Image (cartoon, rainbow, N blue to C red; front, side, top):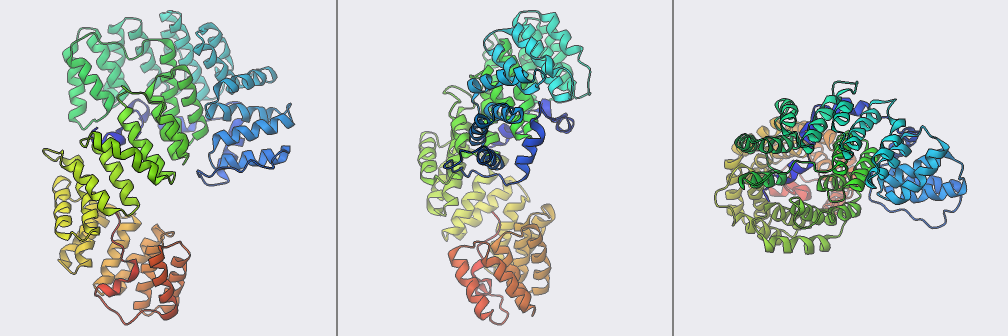
Length: 600
């Protein structure tokens, strides 16, 4: 897999980018869930922490546990506690509504449908219940029942209204009522950003119906608005090929790739077009079309912070099309952002062999195992991927970075080297491999090799700030090329003035050069940017001491001590608190324990 594929996979699909701000404003409550959901996620940090379920039998205990689980973004635990609270108060519509929402968001769809029936009976206007029941009906190939269930969504806030129109159109498509389907979308009144979604889906329905010419006309408008939109590109190229314009289809894909586009689905599309065989439309059945609509809305909502809504839309998308890989990948990525790494692993595992997203999913599994503090599991998962295909640079970088995070620099260096050995002619996207190997060379006392790697990275990506920062700092730390090193760090700061780690490097460079007043100025700014970093606070304490501000120095060292520094750094900080620093120095000894290197 190309090195840049993960970045592409994580991006908002282009068709959604133009409407994100407007959509964010439209993320309103489905039923009564909005206020309660917002309250839960506003009162605590995201975390992968698990909830102790023992001893929580009462209504109040279960409710408080549910709220706490919501704070931690543990959707499954929150759903379980709301169910327990509901059992203690079965007539409480608020608890029923929250139970349905969290069951849907956590993927317990069969159970969610049962509770949604109860919710719809007690509150026929509830939009969440309506959406859940509609999707379940469509999944069971009951389009008329699905369409009727959507009625509560058709009036009110923009998001439910748009959702209803898209799904209603696909229920007509399921019955091959093509004109009704497209007229539903064309007739929808609302904000201009609605057209981003309705134009695309009207075109997908036309192509599915065999009307490729109409699909081409509709898709051209969307494509001209944003030729970088992945799903539009795919649908447009397929419609062009199906209408006998294969050369044009190939050209727009070439244009996308030449402009830096990089995605496994585009690679698959290129292969299909090159084979000159019959090209299938992007969507071949109504359930998959409705899944595509929910996926698009879910991704957009998720990137604006509506995590419960995003998870619900993506889970419903998977309920309709379990073989659809994009919703699964996006849902797993959403779980990553919620620090629910075990759940992310479970969803990535749903992406099957043969999928163009399979390689990326396997690499992400390894990264999530590491993020869940299962270093050995991550290593055991990633090592076979690299051994099987050292040219899979994404797997190489993932393994190298996991090993480097555990300070196993020798093994990390070997991993990067395996990937680099497969590169025939380095290009810009390979700079990270050389940069990372340079770090491991520097950490294993191979400075000449490290310097060569950093120069190679800069040759591929001139003035890359991370590389400038690391190489410049290293020179100063080694008392080599002092002026050139300082200029490199200044250039890095000019590009990333709000990066506390790079600003810290500049301040510490001044310190190493004995320019203490300038060091204080920059290190104070670094602490403002990264107040929770023990190394940066320790650096500022050293600089304060050297300019005679000894009370403030001890305060900063005390703060650094309390921020969980490494054991080695902690011992040195405690010594400085007891004994202070010796007279000003500019050699290696002056760096003290916090001279751990620049930002990586």
